[in-house]
View 1 (cartoon, rainbow, N blue to C red):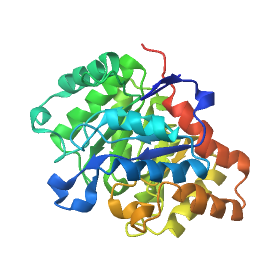
View 2: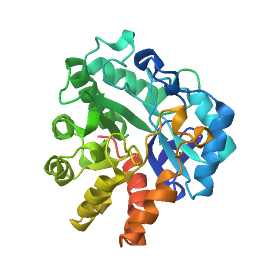
View 3: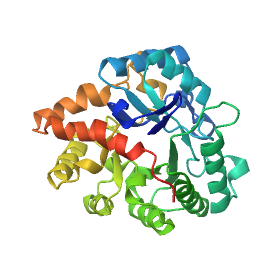
View 4: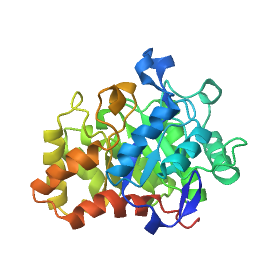
Length: 305
């Protein structure tokens, strides 16, 4: 089963999934940029409709507390668009962790996440289906981020949910895996995010060889890394046999990313990137793994220990 904002569904019902997205978000307090506020509900529905028409059926929404999470809005969006939306519990990274939690230790983080998973988020009656996106800084893991990652792992171990991480420009993925393994978390409960941003192929291969899932989840963000390089790495990883560990998405976080404002929209992966994969000889079977089977397996609630 997978927990969505409208209740639990089977993995068979999950369908084509965008594995790391944001629909309702506000990063402006830190980034001081109004482009990082997504609060236009009517436009959100329109953008989701584009995604649905392209074949998208589910979306993992990783806006957590401190990033502008609004789970009631997500439920409304899911009802009106018919897209399955999974919301999260978690905190992002320094400096986005809310002030009340900025000095917490791993046990406090874990307790908070477990409470939201078991009792619901606030009084909304809505339950998270993933722990994320919990992250680390560029080439370093600050003390509060270490406690956050370990706390997320402990909560995942207790509840059966999966942890989805943020790696700044793809760095610190190996360290995140090691920490989550040390907590006792299994490989099928770990998604290491933004690995398509790491130009060090050997580092990404180390993460893949550990058996965890990884996100190729910033597709289209050519200002960070050209899609040609993403494509080259992805095809190489597929040829090495890692196609059952990779998830695809675009990680839209700005108004300028929406079609309404001239951006690529949430259907970017389906309408632009996947056709290129097919042109490069990637089979429909592998594409189904990337878009359907891998997200469903990663999000399925695991047996509690």
